[in-house]
Image (tube, rainbow, N blue to C red; front, side):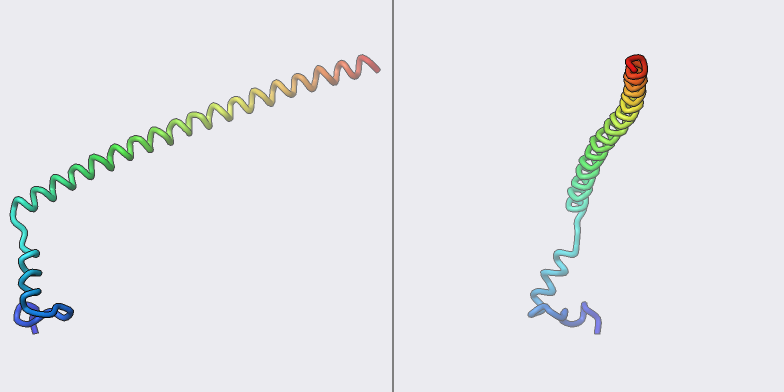
Length: 92
């Protein structure tokens, strides 16, 4: 049995079916409003993605700077250790 010919399971009466059919029909105004909503949502998501991308790029840049700082600190500590070793050797 076709859904249009009979009642829909779960709906109490044909009146409920009529409401369902009425809701299914969309006019151009409805489609235009939905299209505008989708465009607005897409713009919002695009802005969010730009912000998140900027955050990731900033963190990536900070990570590179941190790696360089760790290398320089390691070199500096190696020089200090060499100086301390020379002073210890000279005092013996």
